[in-house]
Image (tube, rainbow, N blue to C red; front, side):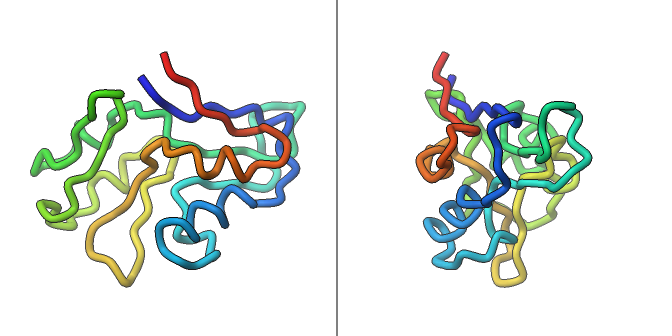
Length: 132
């Protein structure tokens, strides 16, 4: 299984990960389009100033998808079949990490596909790819 992991104690809040994700998939550095979220303060980790929200490929989005268009691939990464998506956004509301992305210029949501672009952009190694 391929997924992103995080070490919040290493996060410096630069948001390079958000910009890299949004740029790669939406051609903008607007963090609202990123499939990763960095949150200031309120970290559950007492050693960290920032909370990193990443998709851990838990499958909750697939469980609530009425049209079954979110399915895991061979590496365990949940993918959205965009052409089949009806845009009900149930997956967005049920994502425990709040990283399902829905933008005004697209009907269907987006999600992390564990591509590693955010991990490569992270200067401190706070985000990284794991393959089990």
